[in-house]
Image (cartoon, rainbow, N blue to C red; front, side, top):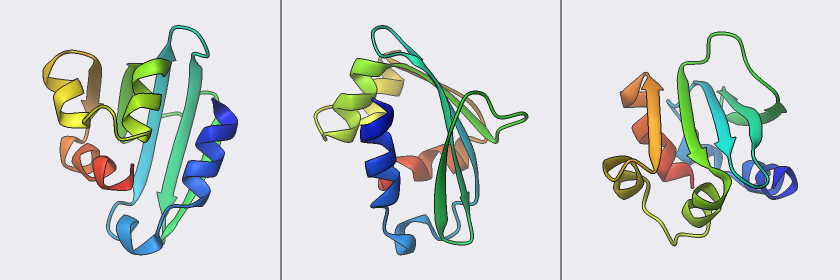
Length: 101
């Protein structure tokens, strides 16, 4: 899963993350679960493993559902509304995340 995430983060279009500066903490459950964060600053995204102190947004989701969102098989808003995705923190910043996936 981490390899797929590194590939995804590395291919983010800088124009899409303009104005999305912040740290997104992901807490994944289920098989291939774990914790990682994506730090976005100055048009660049960086993936780190583990937990980031004081992230702007914390996202809790199963690894399977995150993969479905990355593949376009699950809409982030739908996942949130159905309880498959939980978000804490800066909701305005969290909304920008869907454009990155």
